[in-house]
Amino acid sequence: MGSFNILSIAGTDPSGGAGIQADLKAFSALGGYGTTVVTALVAQTTTGVAAVHPVPPEFVTRQLTTLLDDVRIDAVKIGMLADTGVIEAVAAALDAYRLRNVVLDPVMVAKSGDRLLAAEAIEGLRTVLLPRADLITPNLPEAADLLGEDEAADLEEMEEQARRLLKLGPARVLLKGGHLSTGDSTDLLVEPDAPAVPFTAERVPTENTHGTGCTLSSAIAALLPQRAGVAEAVRDAKSYLTEALRRADDLEVGRGKGPVHHFHAWW
Ligand SMILES: Nc1ncnc2c1ncn2[C@@H]1O[C@H](COP(=O)(O)OP(=O)(O)O)[C@@H](O)[C@H]1O
Ligand SMILES: Cc1ncc(COP(=O)(O)OP(=O)(O)O)c(N)n1
Image 1 (cartoon, rainbow, N blue to C red):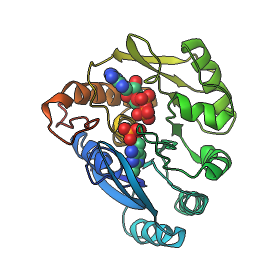
Image 2: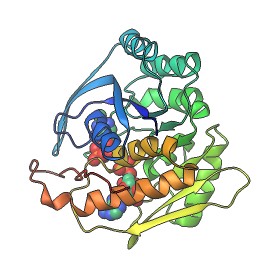
Image 3: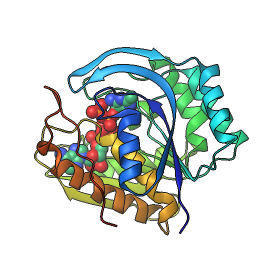
């Protein structure tokens, strides 16, 4: 079996729970070889974001072209993009290098409430990057912001919003239900002309949920080249995340919402 090179295009987290650091842990745990392009340096920990220092778009391009001229990339996870210039730089590289298996996590705001994408850049995310994604993985507030609507309140509204997001151009939508106040944690995979597929897991009783969104999208990217289809990759990524949440309380990292605990997966 060959090896699979997975690229994370995202911001940083010195505490290791979210962003590029989380992505690399998930890639390794799931059998991928991790590569990175940094879009922003973020001073953040388990207690929140202190400061954001975006990388100039031309240097994001320089990182991308330098990497992509040398390394074959089998899947891409896109996370924090900071501003419109970075969005355009990433879109240009996706086209120029015909990157495939593109998973876009439309990161806007950290759990602490701090902005990771300038509000005026949401339009660029919607019009420039969504149509280039094989899969987008918004949470409920991100889906609402992309559509200019209120947040979905139940699974029926989630499916309706996911279908409206499809009209913006991504091939598939995984709408994450972590923010619903239900007893379990259900995400919906929606693609055109097919019934929605629910992925349900127990809601793990932990406060240590820093990096759940990053971990899920990077786990999906790592598994896409290794699975028969997107649904299989999402199923196994969700199992991986749920187990990483179950193990989160074993870690002693910081005073706030601690990170999930990556582990070497068994498959
Ligand atoms: N306590 C929890 N137990 C199990 N799964 C969870 C829990 N919290 C979040 N998740 C799952 O983690 C993933 C990301 O969660 P969500 O909170 O929806 O997005 P984000 O982290 O981007 O805000 C989703 O698959 C969601 O269902
Ligand atoms: C650099 C960076 N990217 C993304 C996030 C958001 O990550 P997420 O997995 O949604 O977890 P929380 O931060 O919301 O706990 C981030 N914090 N930093």
